[in-house]
Image (cartoon, rainbow, N blue to C red; front, side, top):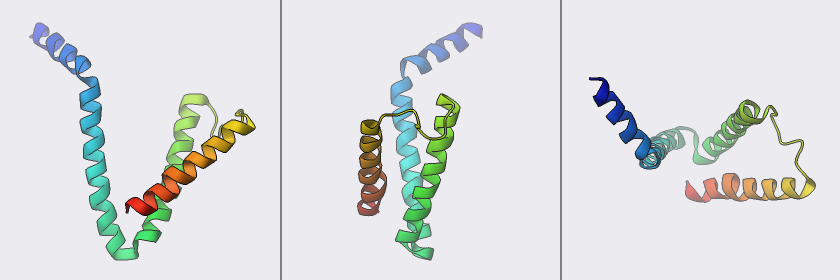
Length: 99
């Protein structure tokens, strides 16, 4: 019984990347389904703005938990430029064109 648990844990650890990819695919699927239903009720642009707001909050909480800061106030001006450019392209344009 204990040996089976060890084998299962080793199997999970050896396939952690595949499990993470599968989990991401499942999340994207549920995201698309929820976005479609919400978009039909209130419009896709409104839903996209709400998603951006939620993404900002979750990113800030993640930064607070991992770095102790809500925003990267310790970053250089160059890092802020690339962060803002990445956010505009990824969150704003990417989501608008995706959905």
